[in-house]
Length: 407
Image (cartoon, rainbow, N blue to C red; front, side, top):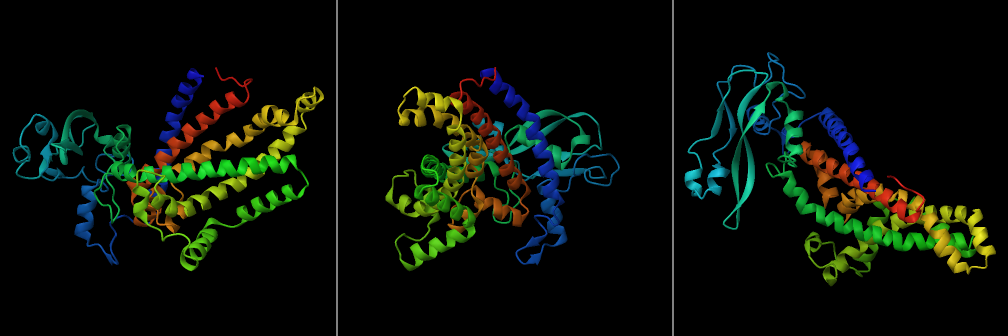
């Protein structure tokens, strides 16, 4: 099993690279850019060019060929890299902040296009100094090729170092995407895990009951429930419940984004605010699980080994919960990977409806703002969760059916 998991992780690397490449192409294919507008007015040309140069959007798209008239190939004697920020290595050595900060902007001499050369790469980062966060420039000597001095390979270089770059959105301009994701991911994970728990706790038992009492009022009731919930979009169900339970009847308190930052999920303030969005998302999950579980259990109950177990005189409870249910859960386990990946990276509609400060909310905002780095960061995170979720499904398979082996 260990060898299989390692093999799957290795195979996933080129898949991730392909996802990054095609997502990068698709996002940039959308008309417009992050700096085209400032509020309701067009951004002046000089300011737009300065912002594009600051965030590397003036570079060639994929490859940087000589004499393509795209910066930095043409005559630029000096090229600004970053504003006057302190040197990270100097700060770590104990040099005072004022002495470690240069008097002017940090610039590099540009000597023209070269296929290979050694350059001093400066990367803006954040370090902890005296208990507080300080922005500084981290310098390192690297082998460089101007052929790959482009937007795509610059971003890929950052991703390989687990750095998703700086946000180019209007409201989050210049903030590290890593920090934005780290701030919002726990909220989406909390919402997603609670919803998945409710989905399985409600959907699987209902599906089993519907299969055991086939063509009975219980079966009809579960089928009606699952079909109705599946037919009502979350975009419709959410506002209806908000109007009825919060606005009209005032059973639940108004939505409050601050509650999702509370550390204790057993806090009544958190429970009273979270119960509605978690229930809406969880019940939606349970509807699909109930139908899938019912169909799977009905199929398993027709198998020969179930007839054999009953012929041996085993109790019906033993036949159902020991022999039938584990095999019936194999199709259900198949959707665990995509389901977890989807809910852990944020439910777009739920987070927007209930003002939840999660990844789904910032993802929608980033689309309108053309925040390329944030969109790519969330997409990569979703892909990683999806790959890990599918590996988890394979591990669950071996527990549900010992005949399945991957080594």
